[in-house]
Length: 393
Image 1 (tube, rainbow, N blue to C red):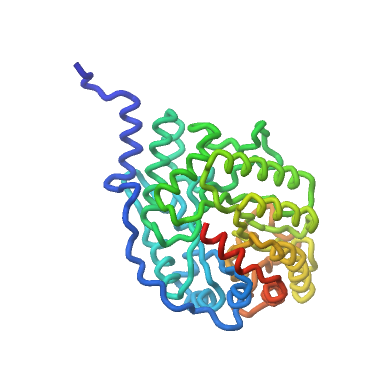
Image 2: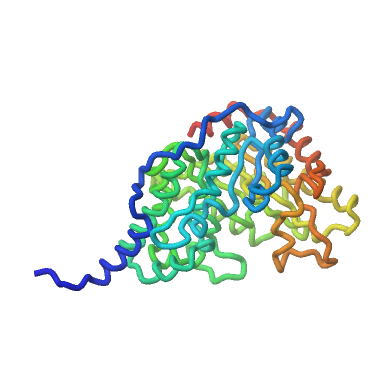
């Protein structure tokens, strides 16, 4: 005779299921409108990039997008691909058990389609941006329950946008940082690792592929770009893990270099070139997903600082754009006043001046960084055919 009281396992599984009531993993895509003619101008960053088979775009913060027509015009003029900063993360989509919130992400998606722009999805599995109710849920769950929750989460958000997202950041920042305890496998200690073990990475890619086979699964990682020994170690770990994933048949198709470059660290073009070439040999597409330049090491004078930022960007982009596997270049926003760098305690300039890390200034004027990026695209070799093959998967 069954017990009249539900088991702990049943209670936890029910709690996870309640967050996704009425939603199936293969839910049909919402109607975001047809993909219309491109809006970008003939002299835009996207026009220069697309001539070489690359797509340029940016992160779009809804607080700016929703209220500033000049911002929307700039994004429509310059970009061929967009990504939401927060609006597709779990903290935004699942604010409470049994409740989903897609309105802001949907609005950006409709804008993109109306302007002939593609969309990236950001991000499915991260140790940050978790709603307050999810951490304790994962902590109480066994592996079966945690996997059920992960399947329902990815199925919900990827199913909602099914067929309209070019690539999803499936896992984000999964390697331990420089100052964190190192496991032998290099993985960061997170609620996902605690609940599911190291196989959660492979599992997340397989679930996305089930939910939306057309979306390219991307591993998005930070601090793998510059010429210091601890980043070289991380690059080695990346290559080793991707080799293993490919051998296991995990449907990983892309690797994302966040590219939050800092002027206080060097760019070693030789190391960078070798790393990108090794990724290309593995059949992995490459994306710059969050490109900007922390200008702390440069002078306060605006003209001198802008020139230094532009020169720094060229040293990086000239190498990256040489690699045939490079598909997308996205800046983390496009408009200086909104940069996250001014709010981060370890990124603020010592002189207190606002950073100037992005292509457009506070008046939406094109800065030296914009011109350096456009020239880098124009000077890059044309790998359009190789890039088209990688996009097809």
